[in-house]
Image (cartoon, rainbow, N blue to C red; front, side):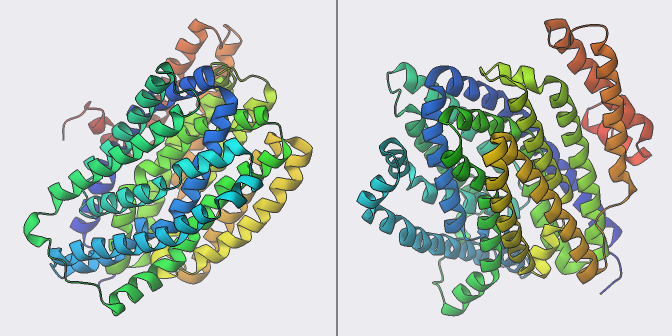
Length: 502
């Protein structure tokens, strides 16, 4: 094998990453246009109590989806790339069918016993909480199916279906139906019905995208063999465990806070989590194209080339997330105030949560190397961090409430990513970072200085302060990037903004 990826392959990877990430970031902006109105619907129409019931039910559904999906959202690329490498598109179709069958079996094994324990769960949880669980539980299976079909479209490096499904269909169907059902008098069930309609809509669109990419003449089911199932289950099991633990790390705070703080405080925490998603979606905008690119590069290139790809993407992610978090430092309190949430405690909680997600999103890309080279490392590390986070979250929440839970997540993610980077150096003698990762720190420093100076002249929370702070701040950040960026980086950005021709 050659020492380096051929130049054209590396160039194609970079172009695909940029194109896919740009499409997903555009979708993220579109989705933001629905997420903020949805928060208004939740906070101003349904109220924190009903939102708390909905949040608890959706949290459980997402946890079960991680089990049902069995890691196929990422591990499936391993098998699809083998099929494509052998020019066997019918094999791709059969791989997808096999994943769907495995998910169905797992889903049935989980959902049916839960309904059989209905009386027990009604005694375990308050009536309203349990009712929401039973209403939404089967949606976990639909969600898993949609993810499988969208994974197939991403494997073909066609990003428009993923972008449309996640950035248009999902958020806007949820927004429109939740608002419409409220005004139709469905105050108690409107959010839950809207969640069902959203999942059905996403699944139908995912099926449409799958049908557009994989033509009819390749759809010949060859049947499942025990060897094929064993291969898929064996390879995906560590990823499934890792994904489940990752979901639990992000959700255990909700379960613990429900037993410690008041429903109102949990509602505030839930709204902060929704805003935190703005930062989280930046990393998720890269994942759909990053995962198939890295999966393919790991198979056909030295790991030092993979490290270069990850270092470049980490820099892009960190640059965007650092901008958002710096703006939230000055405007997070005002943003929370729009949803009738106020106080320094809520603002600090928001900043801690978004910082935790920035650490995980910008510095956690090395997880992909372990996913494809040593899949057992990720779940073992995550189990240790889950235990740490659970213990720390409980201890800090008892004393500091929602701020303690957010601080626990930040500490846990920081420790996890430091350990993972050390393990990458130990196992593979690579370090997926270079000095460019420090550039966003300089850019954020320039933005912070600008907003601090502006705050001495006008009130940043006023209409004029918000306008000048956001527009001027983004301009300052952009100019700082142009000053310190390399020539290639400037060319790429200007080309994406249509300010420079190809």
